[in-house]
Figure 1 (cartoon, rainbow, N blue to C red):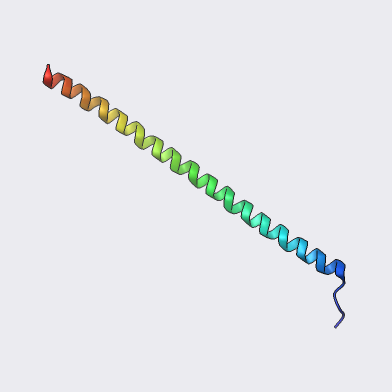
Figure 2 (cartoon, rainbow, N blue to C red; figure 1 turned 90 degrees about the vertical axis):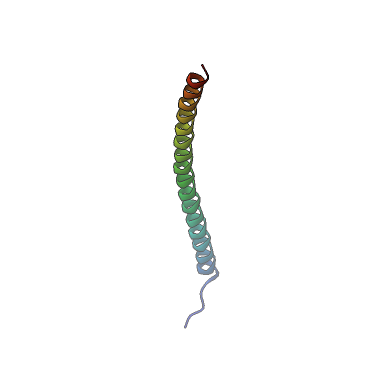
Length: 65
C-alpha cells in the first residue's frame, strides 16, 4: 500500500479540525436557542407573579379599609 503524502495527512487534519469546530458551533447555537426559550418561560412566570401580587395587594387593601 502506498504511503500517504504529507499533503494528504495535513488535509485530513484540517478537515477533522473543521469538523470539530463545526460541531462545537452547532452545540453552542443549540444551547443559545434553549437558553432563549428558558428566559422567555421565566419572563412569563415573573409576569404571572406580578399580576398575582397586584390582585393580592388590592384584596388586602380592601380588607383593611
